[in-house]
Structure formats: C-alpha cells, structure tokens
Amino acid sequence: MGWALPTKIALAQSRVYNVSMITEWVTTIEAASISGYHPEHIRELIRDKKIVAVKKGNAWWVDRASLIAYAKAAKQKEDRRHGPKGK
Image (tube, rainbow, N blue to C red; front, side, top):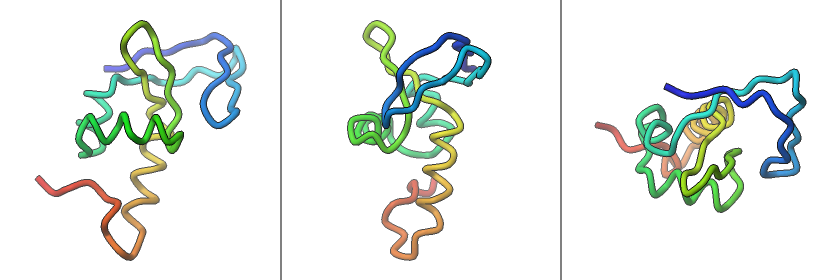
C-alpha cells in the first residue's frame, strides 16, 4: 500500500520528521480510497495544507495519519459538509 520514508524532510505546516520517525505514505489515489474523498479533493487539502504531504517527482504522497486525523475531524463537524460522500 504505502511506503515508509525514514529520512528527515521539512513537511507542510512546518512539521519536521526526525530520522527515527517512520511515517506511512500513500498516494493521492490510495488516500482517496482510504478516506472516501475524491482524488482532486485530496490534492486541494494538500494545497490548503490541511493534510501533510510531500511531492516525489510528479506524484504527491500523503501522510496516512494526517489524512485519517483530518477525516475524523471532518466527520465530527455538525454541518456534515466536510465529510466524504457515501458510496
């Protein structure tokens, strides 16, 4: 599914991951599958720095924990506009 990046990288939102911290990264397509959001919405969240991601070549890689935290917070909002669409 995802891959681990055990190197030091300055990430979005001024987060720096230490060499000892291994993060699970997923592609935008995998992130869409996990969250239920459309891949373009995932890219919008990346641009708005609402989820942590790094660009590798032409592809964005999303921090899985960041994505899950965002989706959980969106589900708890009372207006229900920010959660993924049902399938």
